[in-house]
Image (cartoon, rainbow, N blue to C red):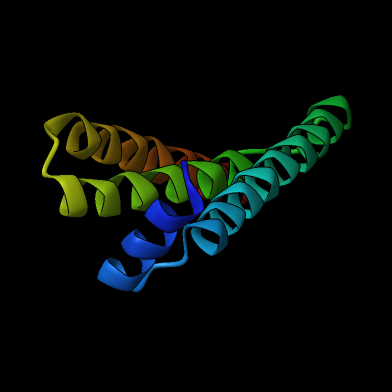
Length: 102
């Protein structure tokens, strides 16, 4: 993209594409870090024979809420279905964890 085209788009929308891209990439890398640490903690919990439904429930709630807001923005049905399925998985894992630790 040429410099003038970028400036023209910025003046029209008021959105800084570089800042948006940096935020998107930062969120993505943060999710990778969260996922990696979650896998390590779940591996430890399995190794020590501890209940581990809490960590996957946190990951699925992240996916569910993210998919729901993507659905609200785009109205694409697959995001709604992803939100529902991951939400149900989150609730199921959370209930399973509570039953294990009761």
